[in-house]
Image 1 (cartoon, rainbow, N blue to C red):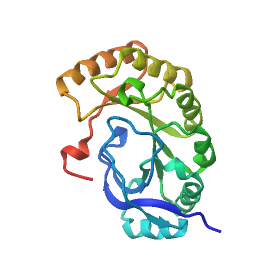
Image 2: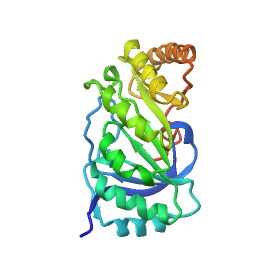
Image 3: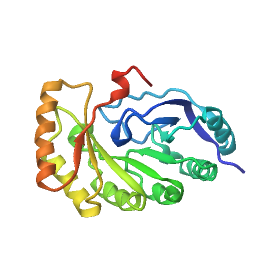
Length: 225
């Protein structure tokens, strides 16, 4: 019996975040998330159910030489059984699979990593999310993700504390010191306050020999999805 997946939408656009900014992708947005970060800008209230082959058929309708398929959300790893089969099918069709994830479900990642090519992993800093910390989950997640190409993203807010950022840098140095850390300013905060933090955090990264770059959400500025 095929596992069905809850998908909010499938569409073509340009990647607006991280180190692959500007690349054309097919986006598959999964319904549901295990977190409620204070800065979340993705509100999902509906979905369509797909069997894995049905999703592949839908993806193929959008295929036009794009760089990759962005499996995003929500949190795709909440539907790991369906995701695993979908990744297997798309990989078999020659697609590059790009997984956007909050980095808190290492056991689920372990089950699907074979068919993932690129992992875009969030680092959830507690003073940014206003949630509890996920350092141990992030540590295990990054170890698994590092079998493939991986980069990290941290949302920087007015509330983001230096101690949290230093813990983030420490974790990267421990697990995968070559992984790039993207610092993404929170759109909902006052830019001037966030810029000061970005400057400070870039300096800390440089001193700790961790590669960090500041990349805003460019798709919003360009009026793209």
